[in-house]
Length: 117
Image (cartoon, rainbow, N blue to C red; front, side, top):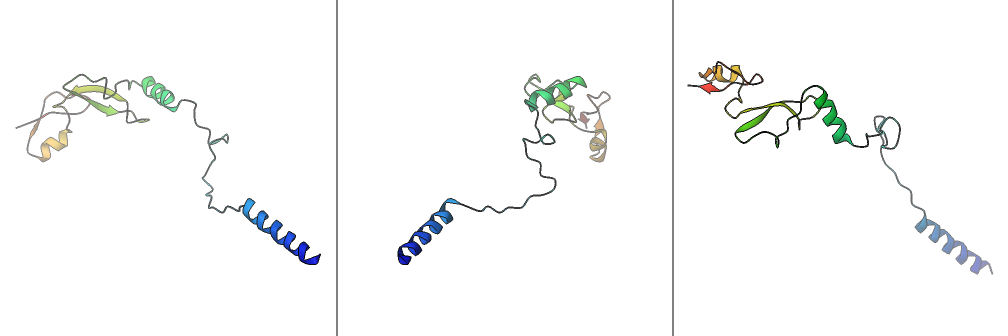
């Protein structure tokens, strides 16, 4: 009977070892689970970002710019929204033109210039 008891205990311990797993990991103090109050993401983060950008005048996207124009001056909350669309030639800073011995255009678009020879 003691042999059967030992076999029974052995089988139970083996099954316990198979069914229970121990997980180890590293957690950082800055890790916040998504379902906790501090780490709760907005229900629609795109909409929230879009609203924040639109509220301060950043409504353009690369898709809303007409052909021959480029989005200029990105929103500080998202690089997907821009202040305006400028003609493609207005893509350089004044300093960029001057460093290359070129003349910046007399007009700018959102602080960007066209470089002229």
